[in-house]
Length: 231
Image 1: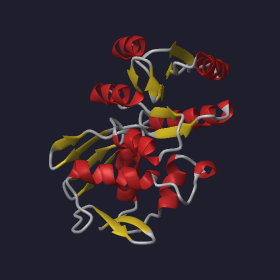
Image 2: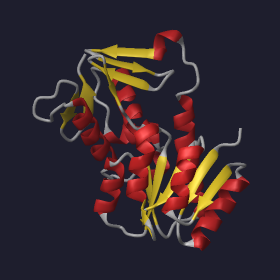
Image 3: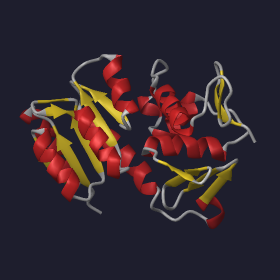
Image 4: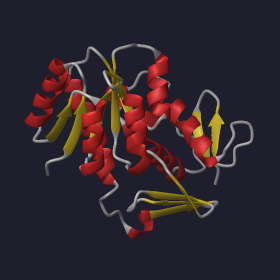
């Protein structure tokens, strides 16, 4: 199957290199050097994943990520030229699933793309019937349709948020560490103990679920250990 990947970067050498490596994996690449051209593609093309540079001449990757999240749940990987934590947190909060800092090795980006596509497309596979729908205290997670309801109202979750909530519900009653969550979602090779990626996604989940750290109804923090959903 040829996945359709959007690549947006105004640095032509980087965009062209990423395109080459992804085409070597038999992906169909839609490459653009500006936000305006890419937005037209987002509206007209059924994509499987987007790689967005944060800084663009006529916009930024953050606003494009927001635009994607209005109608689509496919993974978004942000490219940032800075090591600033605020850029990474902003991207994750707006619905991005992963980020990679320039300069990067093309093979690392390809690995990230593959990991995100594997996880995203897993939602479209048909699990056993008893695993297809998870129900817990007003929360309904449909693995087949990648839909989530809270007290009968739909929750709009990114693929990463959906994965975290699904894992916690499957393990309800047990504490799941950040390391475990990171391994389940991205794999061991990208784990860094100083990485606050999981923390940001948990915070975003709580906001969407109107859950609190102090008096959690759903996601409880076990300080120094991880997170759990009570049975």
